[in-house]
Length: 387
Figure 1 (cartoon, one colour):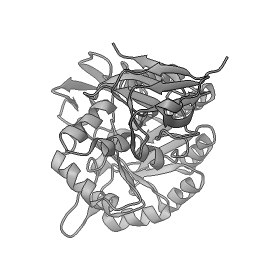
Figure 2 (cartoon, helix red, strand yellow; figure 1 turned 60 degrees about the horizontal axis):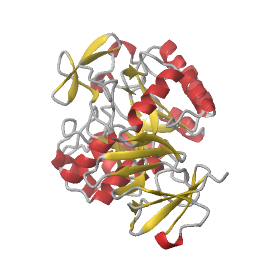
Figure 3 (cartoon, one colour; figure 1 turned 180 degrees about the horizontal axis):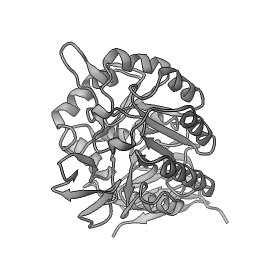
């Protein structure tokens, strides 16, 4: 029996341009083609979406939790399944469960869970993001200072080994805790190195880019800022063409005017892309949870420790897209690229995900005209259908 389907009745955005009166043909979990509606293959099952838009699935490279679960508290393949499922309903079809700075034992358990999730092909699992523990105390944010430490030979070897067992392994580190030669070794092994939680200056950041760092973690947050005589890590992330940078678009972490300024100034080929930095609260009515034994409170759209320090974000990806379009004023196509094309490219997955094109994974999101998620497919299988 053929698995071929033709999705029709919606305006299609392929990651580059819009297609009207067209159909997306999917077969065997992959995209076959975008064709004129009159040219739908006779053997394909036609699915009429009844209007709205069909866009590439969202890709989130920084997801600490969801569905009531934090990866730190439950570093298991079951927790990864829960997190991926929680975010799928908001249009995220591929994500990196993210471990915030923790003990070596918890880190090892998270890596083992990631390896198991990759082997089991958990829907939505793209790999792991290890945010720390090799950070700067001066820019620790909500990370537990007692757990922050320099990278050792054993840490480096563990990252290299883990990379061989999952599609993507991303680590956030600070030059203050990791030598440039280690970054070069990690990059050669295929580990994506992102600079973050760092007070490093522009020259140091650019030197680490030369060593192989290709990303900056949550632009403007927990990093040295742009000054008149010292551009800082934030300035390097924007001015350095080899850097891509994640952005938390909730209007709390970064002011909309600052976002707009950064987008206008960003030097390519790297791009600024959206991340949620989401916590356990996504998809729940939780009012608090714990992180490394400390209570994080959910209030007024933000997540904070008792002292007011921001601890991740109460944000899902479709809300970030809406914010960029409606508040920052970005063209909808560009806001969608920030959630799909650009993170896919930053993670080295642009050949497989982020666009609706022949040979790509059939990861898709149906949106209403009001930018609500109507349906989500991962690998051609529908994983969410809205009311």
